Amino acid sequence: MKALRWVLSAAGVVTVAAACADSERDITMPQEDAGPPVVVPPDELPEDAGLDAAHEADAPVRTCSDDGWCHTVLPPNARLRAVWGDGAGVVWAVAEGGEVYRWEVDTWKMHAKLDGSLRAIWGSGPTDIWIGGEGGLFHGQGATSAALAFSPVLTPGDPLDPIVSIWGRDSGDVWAVGGRLDTTPHTGRVLHYAADADGGAGWSLEDIGDRDVAYTHVWGSSNSGVWLAGVSYKEDIYSDLTTVRRRRSGEAAFEEVVLPGDPTDPGNGGFGTLYAAGMSDGSVCLVGETLSWRRGDWRGVSTDDGETFTFTFHAGTPKDQVTHAVSETASNDSWAAGDYGRLRHWDGKAWKQSAVTLTHLPLTNGFHAMWRSPANELWVVGDGIAIRRDLSK
Picture 1 (cartoon, rainbow, N blue to C red):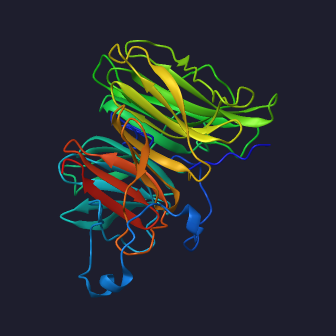
Picture 2: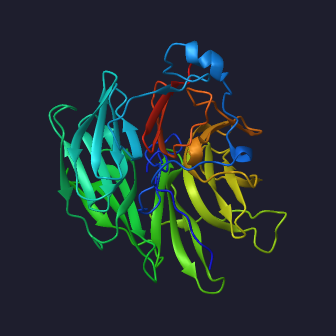
């Protein structure tokens, strides 16, 4: 049986939103404590800046890497799993231990402690934030961002199915998905928060038509609609398989998105596992692996304003690490983050590793989520790390 690996990361993404994986980010199911940093074999180290150790000893303390990634100081043992910002200078991150962290005026502070491991965060504005995790959904509201109080929300479906990804268009149109991969068959749920004609709003359980599916990602854009990814076990191939579905803007039903396989492997080159997803209005980026465990990405481009997408498969390399988060603004502008400090940029032709370390040693912290601000500042967070870069410079 194929071992399915999940790195949990919602939405824009899919850690996913309008910029691929804004909330999502890491959408893997709960994992055991990562323990001490893993030593990466020399031939697998990122192409990170190789600084001269002798010169480094005499240099002032650095806070930003050669490529402009500025490191922030986190509270001890912060294992961040999702990140989102309100666009007004405040950034929120949720952690494996149930902590909710808030960044303002160049400082991280723990704002709240919720039940269970937290996996997703998305908000429509500074005083309307949703968080998902093992304890279900939590809603943050208050007079100001600093005064936000988070409370559990009663939602339909099996409460044992954790919420692992959230994405929304606005305060009256929010999606949350989750599920369990440790049961046979798998279980899952798709929740939709919508405003009604009377001015009220509430969560409903969506009937997607699939059964025995653990949902792992939700993302979308205003033009293209809502996208879902879910995992089910297929007895005929003795493996877990990811299916992507989409509900177009203005439509009521979800339809399956057929993705091309690896042309060099017609037998087992079909789409197998999704690690991260996200999109812009005219492009979508799905990073994962084929049924034969070959890593790569499926890139979709639209020429009709998000109505249809044409997908192509781009093969990765055997040294590629698992990707947990993607941010995309165009088909030639994507960022992907994952294990062992891997942070890469796609320029439309190839992926290139970005320098993130502050020393002559490579960074080995795992990245799990990212969020891009309206001002084009990109945040990337993970195990004991939160970095940011002004991409406009």
